[in-house]
Image 1 (cartoon, rainbow over the protein chains, first blue to last red):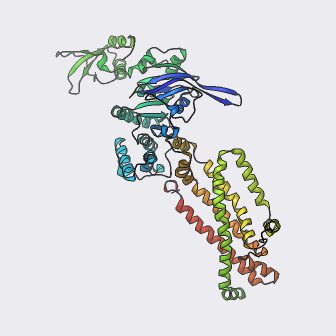
Image 2 (image 1 turned 90 degrees about the vertical axis):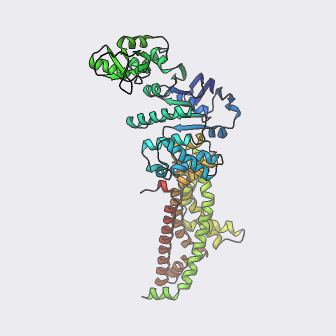
Image 3 (image 1 turned 90 degrees about the horizontal axis):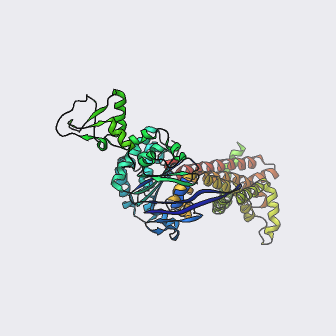
Length: 322
Length: 217
């Protein structure tokens, strides 16, 4: 869907040329969320901005759905790619509905159709259109503004979304909420997403695959669990953090390590977990209660299996990933 | 009392002089807007050009208006327009440039770079970005520049009475030469009121044209 081939960008500075992105090749599959992760100045944002030609590559190729983006007019190209930035950049002189209607208007949609689409997207993001369509950006909270930034990027239903640290300016509580909503929306929309972040937790939560950058180079491109289990080098290991095993726990759900039980009840004490919980909850209960195993109960309260410390350890030691 | 009687007696003449005055200021500011706003936008592309243009504008501002009229007389005499309406308009237009160009330049440059980045990233062309984002956001500050230009011009045009351009300055110049305090006060009063009225109506326009989402509550 998105293919980068030996993408390189050098900037001329007074102190000589600086290579911001150095021979990056990667391929993002249709419907996949790929997080470009790394410390500031690692080239992740420059990479993103080369895809919609806000930055012209020094060398290398970018293919979108097999089409070389060099051959497309940049303005045309950008109208077909959703773009969300950290500062959101809602136009203060336009209402929410007008902001969402910017790209539709560039593409010549009539006013009624733009208005309908804005209402549709506001509903999708859980903002009642009657209440929000005619507000101005200065009448929105940070979280609301960011949701509208996302709605604006989705206005013409582009197959590809580029998101440059979209949630970094939100407070932690809001960020969690918006990330969760976004994940639920992505399940429905299946957009191909390139998402820039400097936050390993956000990357683990949002990504199907993570591309980790260091000084302009792509150092590892893998699924989150794989990256946490097997960091490619010392840089990746230190970036993902020494608590990377704990981070993996959120990626594994109880169902994967549970020993199913047929009929017979096993009494392991009151704390139970659901098969859909992730292993963070299991680990917390193990530590809290000092137990070796927990029973798993379904929504109806019937015990359907047990999860043991040994099973968890086996899963964490397992080669590969999901 | 004497002055009041003079004013009442000369109301039609005052009205006529006010219209003359406004025609000079109106045309000068009109031309200055049509030239100065595009110039102010154009120089946002290059820091060095901007510095040069604004520097030149400041130099023009330091020339006393009476001297500027003096410079224009021999030049415009070549087309038989050394004194009167045309040099008055040209001088006033030159004085109006700096506030308009500078405010336009500053306002466009101060548009949040994130908005520019968002506009570009969504696929606006440069002219669409200007028309839909940058100019609407810059408009209140541009109009503030126009307000300054108008007030300056009302003053400059008063001096233009000395080169036969007419206007409310005529009462002042005659008042001085005839030692007639009534004419002097009439002229000064009318000029002051005109400047205040013009400034208020432009302030109203400025509020009207400020995008609702940007108005301070």
